Length: 122
Image 1 (tube, rainbow, N blue to C red):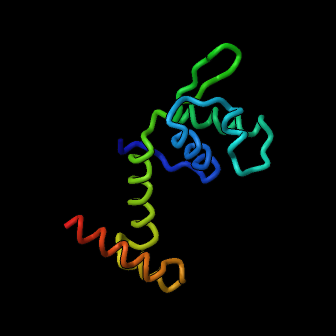
Image 2 (cartoon, rainbow, N blue to C red):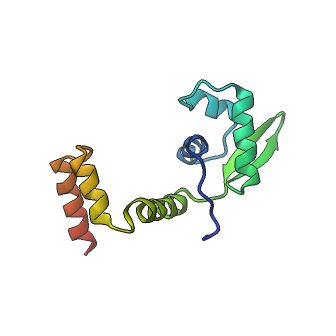
């Protein structure tokens, strides 16, 4: 799925809610969980965009629409993570970790957890 486009943060927040639901959801379900002060019309516009870009499928159930993810969460996050690492750190994982640590965003405990992960992955 190399043709997956990056989605804006607001739309990504919507996708995260849908992915976490693990099933088809309505706009009302999303409105109850979104951390924004959007109107329902704003949310529906974002959902329409996500459908037209191929991230969601929309089906009718009675009078409401249900939204189902077409793009797998892990596939999207892997592609976005690779793109982020390439754009900001020229594919340097060390540069990313150093930046996070120097900026006090990563603790020594986080680094120990990362070290364990790397050891298990090898």
